[in-house]
Length: 117
Image 1 (cartoon, rainbow, N blue to C red):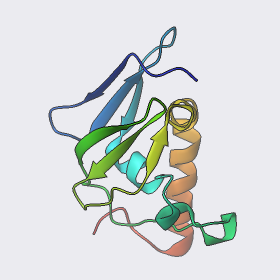
Image 2: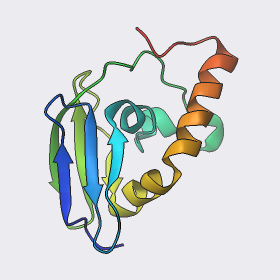
Image 3: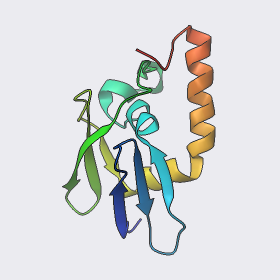
Image 4: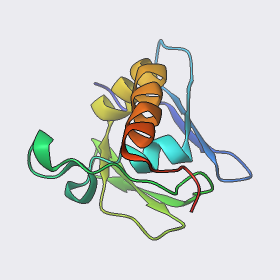
């Protein structure tokens, strides 16, 4: 996957717009990025270790830093910053945003968790 031609954080820091060459822009909410972080803290080291992250409705993006030519590190205002978001992963999130979001909401409900703190 080639690098996006643009990464833009909204003024309220709640939305990341990712534009890949030849594609329509993807709008990825900070909350989705945070709860789907590719970090080991969230994903674990196997599917069985994956964590459902509650209480992130109001999370915001503090900063985005490049990682080589293949990814960015996103720091959120809850200070989570260990996820390396590769171009492939951002592209996948953009295409699967609705399905992943609905699966997340179902997980919260199943586990009796909330998007609120």
